[in-house]
Image (cartoon, rainbow, N blue to C red):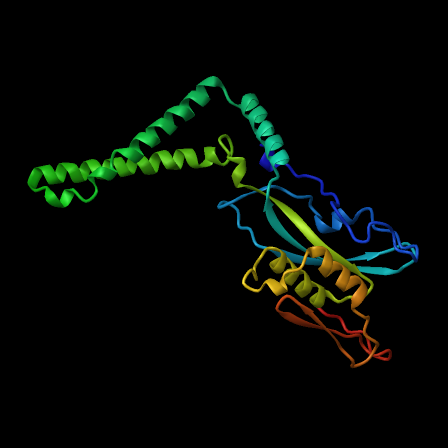
Length: 257
């Protein structure tokens, strides 16, 4: 099934668009670090979808280290990709289902629709019935509800594969930063807050909203690298106040998780 496929990732946009003036090349294999196991599409209300974070370290040819931090989140498919996925599902269905299977699915769908319509008018009326009539109507209602549950149970896995609605499909996206300094915590908090702002989490505070490009250029060009020592640089993003510092030159290396 198309949802079982693993897809290769690619860089959709980057800043700066060209290589750095000092000759540093943009890593062509960066998508492998953002999606170590490729990526798969997800189904809304079926899969557990949380924004997640991970970091990585790239060692370049000359031994220089590049520290990466990225946040993965989910968005709806574009119209173009939704159309492509619908075509893939249709082709898979034609290859794996006989006409009798499709007829069976349609029959179950019709029975489910009939069961959804029939029992509910009886709700609220059984209290007005007495004796044998009340018992018969109650039993009829229970039977209808059992049929409804059975048809739903049959169709549930089919709705997640054969009859899948592409409106419920989500695709993972990753937003990340590469740095010469191992500021993992700072960059993680910065990315999550920028993601919240660009999603409209602070709609009641319009002054907090800026285009994503503005946050990126601010981080790249307007925040000074702190000198070694105790001096910290304060960075405001969204509703967060973050701090940057560098260890003293004579500080011993300390491993941090």
